[in-house]
Image 1 (cartoon, protein in one colour):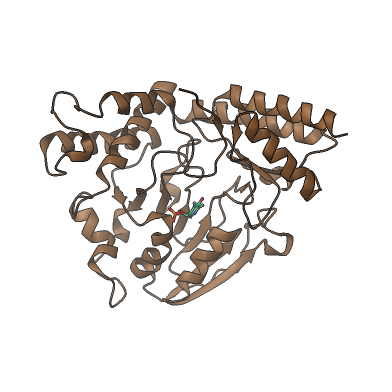
Image 2 (image 1 turned 45 degrees about the vertical axis):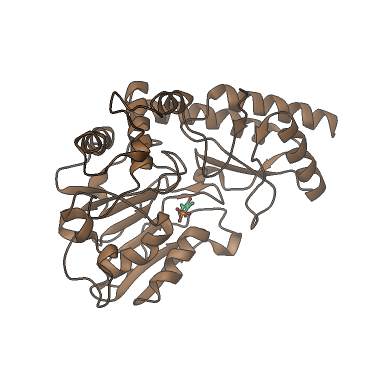
Length: 360
Ligand SMILES: *Cc1c(COP(=O)(O)O)cnc(C)c1O
């Protein structure tokens, strides 16, 4: 068996310990005589798996009792529609456009009502987070929407926007569980798990209970009402059962590692290794404003498309996979999620140093 250092933005690296445990339990989950994949989601065994996953997540994130945790399908992208369908009572919402995912969410919301872009960083190819301390938010906006960590561009809010009393909705797909958060500041926090938590196919929605109502936009399908899933504890229909099981293992791994404040320290330490090198390098350059740098996704360029391509190819041959930047940005991007070991980042930087020397 040989494993590479996988810098993919998503689906992405998972803790080896978790993968090994899942492999061990593949044929016979703890004496049940079957794989979790083959198991009824209504069985007692599975009920324990999903309940434990939820309680471990609650513990990790310190989720208050007046928030529901939903394990849903459809990816983060389905939430782009589900959020307005469930929350746009006044048919108005404010969007902060800091990248492609925020923009997609904003466009989708326009199908359902008046989605206003109250700030954007598109003027500088989304290389910064706009000042959100005093935005012109419509009085009757049902919510303010952000993408908290911009996976493609590598920016992250270091401070949440001043929503002026409006509900905050945040897509945290690519920074989920990377550091502690104050859940009470949000109406909804959600994310696809395939970036930092588990296998694709699960999206976790943490939603304040008073936002779960029957009062959705006319025509909202049953499956797209938060209430449907909240009332059934995420078991209205067959959930992405195996994916939730792996997420549960990652939650246990995170608890064992010491929880989210320890993860934050580790992530800061890892990111610093890479950013410090980018700041001193004469060949490689980071592409975003320093203050807004993401701890999870680190885009960089050499300034030459040819050298970029050469770097990606040579890195791949050396066991560093998926370093090519998003097709919309070019260059490189190293995603260094929770499960990327520090050693992976150190070795990448050593490789970059060597490449710089050879291509000076
Ligand atoms: C990957 C990503 C998405 C899209 O996720 P899907 O599960 O593929 O729909 C949305 N938002 C962010 C921030 C992402 O990183």
